[in-house]
Image (cartoon, rainbow, N blue to C red; front, side, top):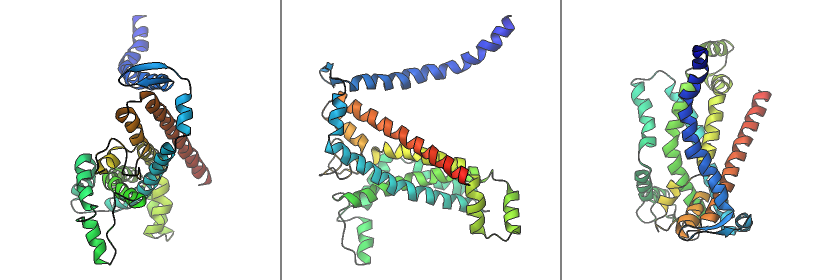
Length: 298
């Protein structure tokens, strides 16, 4: 009887630490944030009373929130689509026989391990208005200098470039690991059928690594919607989450930071956090639905 009890209880004891930590650091903060969002809660003065859905009503009528949401979506699309396509291309190159292949694979991961602060400082200099390398290169082809931090689209492009540089190598290694598991017999069959290398890539490689592509799309979507460090550090003014002189590159998380830690309105910031959480969940569900449709069509 003790042996039977041990076989039933021991597995739960091994996994119990995960669920305890997940409850303490995951579930409880999530539920507590929902509770705070229903109150007029100030970081300094504390709970000022229950207000129900007033914070959400105020949020959905707030033009600054919609501006931040638009900026977030814009930077997300400008960074994620080129990033994943470039990662596919780099992974395909790394999957070929290369001299010092391990060195190349380690090299593409270096941008991801560099501190985001260092990355922001370097790219801030590259995209500087007066002495930036990017404007110098544009000047060589007759393009006038661009004030990358003062305009909406240029600032989005600059921040998206930062994100692309940091995460392309990481995603390419994920794709490379998946490519190594695609059966080589499929490539041999495609070659016998007269398929070119380009055709084999899109007809054999991409379908073979589809689960990994779906994973990177979902993770990149969630990360893109929560983008904070790059635009915050790109803001030369150093203001708390404003995102430029006219909020031209303020993201949703930056707006949350401004309200919660700049203006100390924790209740309103909690409402922003929960709306962002819902947007992330809906985006993930849309990605899964599209993936299932593509899989069914394929």
